[in-house]
Length: 116
Length: 111
Image (cartoon, rainbow over all chains, first blue to last red; front, top):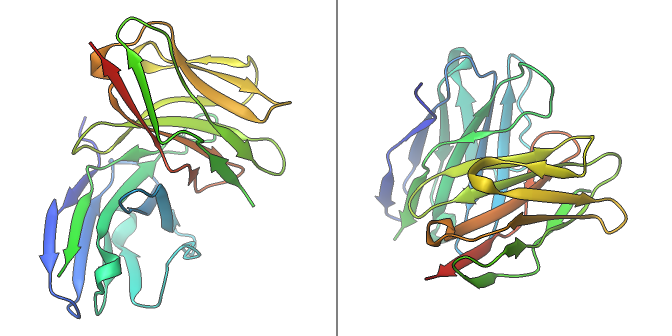
């Protein structure tokens, strides 16, 4: 079946502009995660959605970052007034709560964001 | 707080030789441990996980990992490395979601 998809695959933007990154999780997966992967760093957790519960935003680095998940499916990560340090690969993952947890996460290919 | 350490940025191994990629963790309570692999220009792929039970966990592509509670380690192993195993490997821990990842270890298998 279809995996997690993300768009765009690459995004180049000028400092100060806003960007939106999209994630389509695997159909039926109730949990959705956003991570950031910077060069030489591991994956940094940003935000987590689980069903209709309030999202866990504890990983968002600043108030310039926000995310929505509409209808329990597609999610959009928005970065306002982008800065050069926002340049990274943004990864989305989803997981199911069927069976015994914890549940492995399935990752999309990522969006490479470059802020010039 | 949960944390994961991957002490080696880079591991080089000859094709056909056994490989080990190291991971140690820190978590309060029972650890749930994962290994993921990232091939160039691709997303992370799940390899295996430890929840409870046998300390030796078998996963995809012939990989296995050994959970050692006393040493708080979860090293990834494979008896015979392939050139196609060359990739970036991430260890992750979860006491609860979301996962906390290590910084990754780049594995190079040389023919």
